[in-house]
Image 1: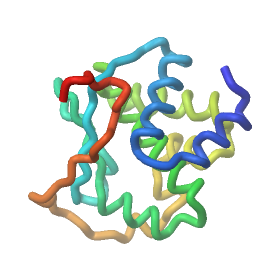
Image 2 (image 1 turned 60 degrees about the vertical axis):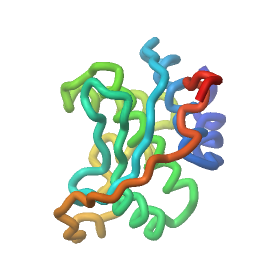
Image 3 (image 1 turned 45 degrees about the horizontal axis):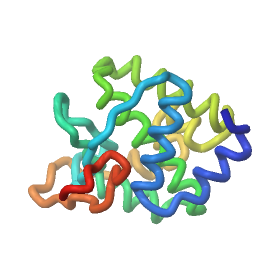
Amino acid sequence: MESQNEFRAKVASLKDFDEAFVLVKNAVYAKFRMHRAGLSLILQVMPTNLGAYHVLGSNVIVMNSHVLATIRRLSGSEQEYNAYVFMVLAHEYLHSLGIVDENTVRQMTYDLCKTLLGEDHSSTRMAKEDPSTLFPQLRNMMQTQFSKEFQVVKNFDKAGQSYIQ
């Protein structure tokens, strides 16, 4: 596996959700020897206590666009925002692999981040506790509803797509 500094640099320089997801899939495979392809990402406003979820038995990960936008606004850098995206996608990807127990997935996400990025990295700190560890303002957000509107992220998990569209 790569050194923590190399992996930190990759997370810091992520450009989009697909690039983040490729890194997540490679990291999960390297650490746990688990893999699947063909996932879709949806962005939707949801209650602020939910960062994301995987629809059990589906190929869908849904991320909270309200929390995502707030973290983008609050983060001191693109690296912090990328750290959040990496951690959340890793967590939900593990769920998509059939691991339904939340505590198991939390521990696996923490182990993955700690191994690849180090104990002091933002991804690891958020995986160990939760994103409000770095962004305490999230605790004061009062979004309680799911929006009926959503956005399907285009060009997500491109490597897992067939050439026939």
